[in-house]
Image (tube, rainbow, N blue to C red; front, top):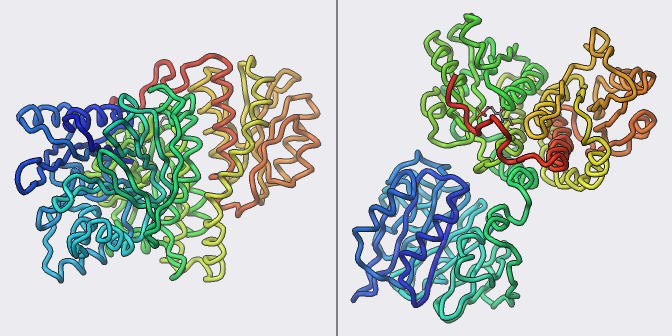
Length: 614
Ligand code: M6R
């Protein structure tokens, strides 16, 4: 997720843009830049951009003596193309008359790029963004807003843009679809930004843009129209009730909660990016012909990762063995090298990591490469070390995750791995076409189902209020849900500091059952599945020993409520995708437990977001 700020007004735009960008710093980024229209004769557009922290951009700007009154700024979180100065925004059109900043993904950019190349346009970056700015130039017939609207109508995907032009040097142009954008209304000055904090020092009066709304503003006024119909849209000016810190968290109390609530949106973006419903295909654009060939003929897969990402690896084992029929082994990265793994050229080692910098996972990657295996990284942070060193990379595009406890990164890892397993099953001819279609239609419902699961929050709160003083929790599950027994326990441990242990429920009678008494809370994850009856028997055994059962079950399941004191419901889905569903109430539960215990949710003690030492 990148950050956008735009300004038109009486002040010097450069410090305003820099201040705005620094207010977006908390989200993390890899490069930043600004563009402004020079007030001089002919109104040239100037661009200053740098890779790395804002300090680099600030240093470059200190050499600029202009005092422009209009400009745009951007912090980039790379999606297409490595983090670099060349790929940093803003991007200029070929004739230097337009500059644009962009959040989101242009899905059909390759097709448009080829079209523009045929027309003689040359590209200066590897980004998808650049196609928009050339398209605007291509569409320009005298009116910038019309050219902007026409260009956007040729794009597929979800994005927000802000554009400046030499042809209309006092105006900013903006568009929003599925990526946030607000107009800030000031006195003799107006703003546009992806996030409220960027404009809060100047105004609390904002207009929230709706999807497919496009508009322009100058220092005196703003105008908003629909993309397809240029009739003005009447918008209400609202007053932001938050202070800066609240605004950074989008009004949530913690980043973790914000990120939990972002899950439907990031899942939707993943589905839109990876599923082509017209052709009934799964699309992994970064998998080369060679990578697909490897996947088709793979002998064995090793899933290697740490912490939450390790749990995604366990889930992937169930997925790959079930649907693609590939033998799959799961290892924690820190043990991988020391087990002296037996690897061959026909094996694929899949490294799963949010940060792409985890030292143990990086060491495992290097070991795998040394032993001749093919390496495939599933990474969230574009351009990270693991993404660069692996033979092949698939990005999860969950956006920056700031809370130390991983939530949305995990759900997108699960979803991406599920789709990859389906893709492998398809390549290996292991899935009958009808089943494949059925799975795609289940996948389609994931984003809206995740929204429904979040509505369980009040029930989770009630339960947490009764249990937050407990210090020991057991999490039990079987099959596809098993990784979430581990993940639910890890989430609780790391942010509430209560001890929690996840077990495969079949293991209960081999030891943990000794712990069950009337004081012991046991979280049972029991969606509809092949192992449902066995899991129900486990619950019966716990109930017989007066354990306190909390269940995560499928909506409409009445049998479970006979045993459970609280039940959190998830919609019915295929067992294959159920891991993505059942983790969400567990995240909410851990979050509430931590809050009730007064813990520092986003920065729990002793932990770091990225573990770069072995
Ligand atoms: O960046 P990575 O996904 O490689 O990080 C792996 C673990 O350090 C990480 O998942 C950690 O366990 C989280 N704090 C869990 O919430």
